[in-house]
Length: 184
Image (tube, rainbow, N blue to C red; front, side, top):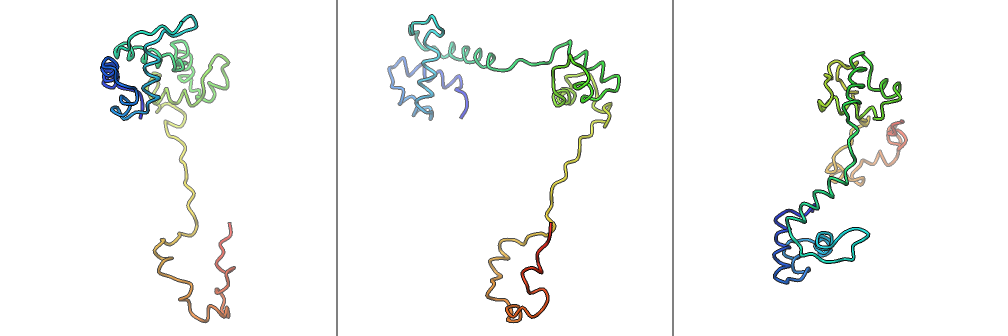
């Protein structure tokens, strides 16, 4: 379902003040009881090695703020810096491709795909039209089968029992199973 909302945290705070059981709160919010229990434990206890699990009252606003802090800390920091931007833009202006920049410069610590993403999302001050392929990506061809298969309905209406007798004799060319095999 996702993260708890501010409204759900408010309901938890109010229900705990009334002394409602965690399972009842979970039913009311249509969440698993362990989600509610974890939320209360994370946001109403001291965290860290020195904590002796001294309990604080659960407050929805504090819980939301702590969740935002944890979420921000969980993300990997971006490799996009002004130094790397200047370096990449300099070489792009010299008509280097992102592949040449990544493989030719030891100071660039990003992937080719990252540089393309930065160009297309306009993080870099460089137009995709000035790339070697002028911003065109490789065309991906889908694999199409040589023989189109009939619909499922065709198989339901055409039974093997309805075939003519000359097919069962296998006297004519094309009535053998090997005649209809399409090689790779």
